[in-house]
Length: 243
Image (tube, rainbow, N blue to C red; front, side):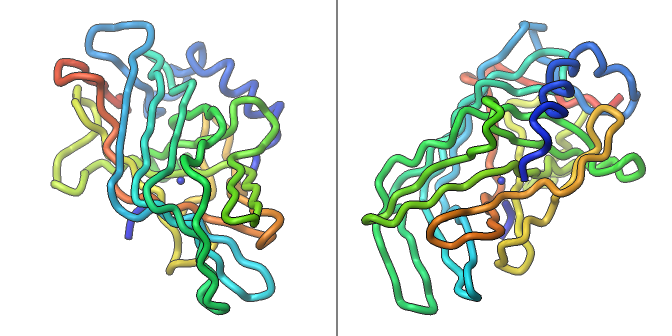
């Protein structure tokens, strides 16, 4: 199933602030281009399959799963950025610990903190397009979850992929599109995110991951598969340019 650590706050803030000015520094560095050259463009997304947050403590794997994810953010034209991102998880959100048979309903909706998203490459030599999501307030807190008295705090950052070809085999780069597919994947159903680094404006940022406290502790991962980000109507399109 395809699929969303805190970088130093000061470093990320500097990178984000300088994104538009520095976006032309590398010819291959991806940037957003809106069809009508609007300064910013509202984009939405929804995912109607099970999404999973995984955490682990003392060898026991815990999962929080929801059946609906909603995404709302603003693409900045001719930049690497999506800002004011709001993500909401709902619909049968359930905490499960299979080893102990624990199942608890979670308070809904689950609101992710306001995020900043930034396009980059996997590395200076691997030009796979990826996107970093980080809390925009600099605190590092990603989300708080409560499930029948159990409280979970997730902190950090997460990197997902924007594949060149989507699930339908359509090219997603260097052309205006009404939908852009993103994937946040994990390795073998574990707490290890599949992608934990990003080459961002000349800097290789490693160790990008999530951590979960209270109930589990330690590493966490987020899995959301094939989420399609799209404009508010069919005439609203966005290009991810790598030229």
